Image (cartoon, rainbow, N blue to C red; front, side, top):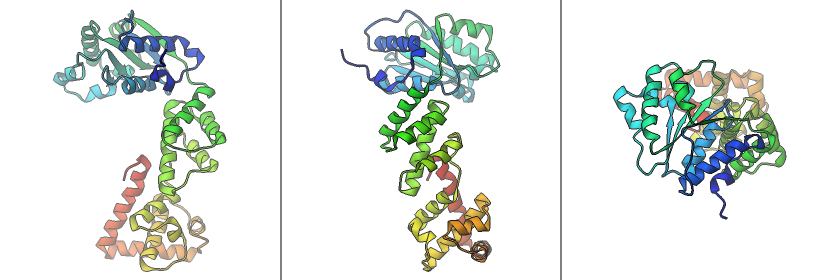
Length: 330
């Protein structure tokens, strides 16, 4: 029997065996192998337990048959435009609504979702995904509608699942990390989304540093809970180097060609102004330069910003590049 690619990529532990079976049945339904007896389906779970991962996997493997709606997007639509979100093509067999708890403060949207999904359930299987960490409840009418089929609670991924997910993401992104690094990420990550974010920041590190991060570097990324890869001197120097067309080694080195010196002054200035680094720490970063040299570099850029419009614009441009680098921007 040919394996379903959905389950070669999707990872759930034994505590979620019932959900795994339901997902397998949905796959069979989408492949016209069997009918599905329950409609709608509700899957509850905490943040990072894998709800959005379920939606992403269905959208990836059954793009022609899956229609996805992020409920948060509904708030930005005019009343007359809501029906466009629920304009499901005849080829679609599965409608997924993610983060339905986002509708808790808007009775109108809840009523509209009930109205549209009830009509669609005549021909389409509907899957609701809800984050259970919110303290507010949905209206009684909405609750009764989403629970009239079958519901489950998604258990959080265990260490084995998180480790396999780290390995899967790294393999897809051609990230070569050691088993020790892989286990470290899995142990320190709260769930799927956190792991995805950390993987993205590892890619960002490789892009800027032109090398893979060490375990110490990964520890620093994970320490920030994956929410942000904190702007640091290395990113600033790499961004300036890329802008000028030099290497990081050139900027940190002792060459005194005018453009290299200018790039070095700018890097020092940004480390001070964007990060608030001490003169001593900046001196250490740039190969042991003394306090007066760091002050001189900062003062030089400050003066040029006042007297030289080109330099002022350059500082603004490179500053934006440094900040954009945190989200993978250019």
